[in-house]
Length: 278
Image (cartoon, rainbow, N blue to C red):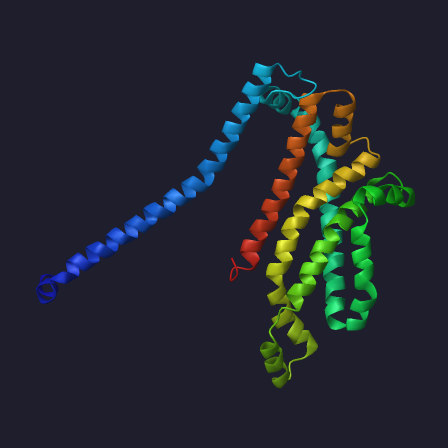
């Protein structure tokens, strides 16, 4: 070591500089992660404090806008009731998420492999997407009744179109040079799909799935508004009609938590499946 140092006296200083730079990089990364968590939490706490003080100072009645402390009290004391209504909405939203996205992916594959099918059915898909979900929900209730099927179909419909558009774009995103190379190598349609088109489409697909993870909850809640005895949507309506404002806010927060949960599951799946992209 001594001989090396004598032969190249600047090596120790170079190593120390590299270690210092590495340590500085680690400190920067720790600070960045801390700020990514601390800033949103501090902002939420600040907004809740402003809300609490505003309600108390201006004497806003509870049935119009409850204080955050009252909402928190409901979240704790009425948690069994909220949880009993959480599971049906989760089940309906999850079924709608899988059904809507599976249909969108299969139809997107058909569109990419047949221009005739795309020309025939894509305008229909656009037309269905233009119908407001609140307008189509009563029609679906007449067709499927007031059971779970209507909620699942509404949740599936609301997921369908974004995934269809993104999946078609993803499957078509392969460069012409890559397709030409595949043809030169005599790759079959099946090989082109599984080894080229599908991997290229996955980033587009997961972008759509993250949107669908939140909108499927909206679809399930809208379905429960049409007619349901149990579920977060039914609890929202019951709380509103009975002026139980703290319970209404607590249910809304519970619905938001469900959307965040589904979004997080899709994000984790994305990081594990398409490591080369994330």
